Length: 434
Image 1 (cartoon, rainbow, N blue to C red):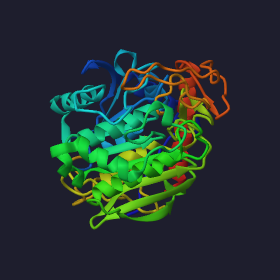
Image 2 (image 1 turned 45 degrees about the vertical axis):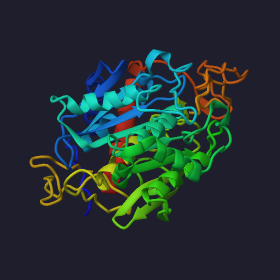
Image 3 (image 1 turned 180 degrees about the vertical axis):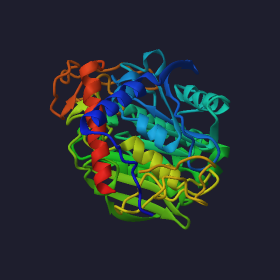
């Protein structure tokens, strides 16, 4: 079904003002809450999910030296939240992290209550049980960048009963240490064995979990090969020990700012389960926001290429094995689209959308202070080993050898205007695509 975009009946200048106003309003819509021993940035959309009952939840995890506020400000989450009826909850790692804001994903010994695992599971359960949010328990997803990606893998394995999907951007694989981020130091089979052990009696819930793994060919901080290991690990687990069949696709049709690269989709008998994405946009070690706000990363967030949050929400919604109903995205551009509205803008009958809901129109491995700056300062591991410090990669906001801009600082009014321009450009591209 062809996706339809609501067209603005305003002059270009008025449209720009409206988009800039949306950027300001979206920023104001975030709420800082204390949940599960963490400060959490929460965005609650006015919409509900096109499948299931109520809203979905996405919990994105920042990387080392990055903050929840930076990921909130530059991550381009608002339109995804509204489009898919998905609460976005971005936690700040508790107590400063292991060191320099790193999540404690390290090593092969984890329980549901150890390290930061208990905080994140409690966060998901608290959001689920908050009546004001109207969360569908079948649509709770965890995603992470860099050390946050490693943490997402750990918790996704520990609690498949809680998390229906796991997204990993530039994250290392299960069982690795801080010294193993720059080269692949495990196999999919080893990681799968460990993941099943973590799940224990909840391993049956892997039958309905989904996963996405992402890397960029200019990422020289976390080994790019970990994306394939993570995807193949989940393929083995979801296939009951036998790898799922995979087929390649081109990333050019995916949401974002001229995304480029290749992907592989792993399917079982009922359809897609996993996506492995390899970007060639040169974003380096960064969360890909696809907002069009600029080239190199702002605080380890890149405006180039894929809109990762939007793709995650799209993939998880379209392929959900837990939520009731079906959502059928459009196919006008050959990709996985983000809406199934009819020409009249109303919800399609029989597409699984909740009544009265429009279904859309349209790590680091834990280096201390070098998420994407070309070299990783070491970090304490689970055994309490001392951290080592690299001599290159300074947190001074300069462009580092890997092409990442570090610590760009808080957003000012000029940057809000930039966001408005980025959103306007995104609207124009989507309108042109029909």
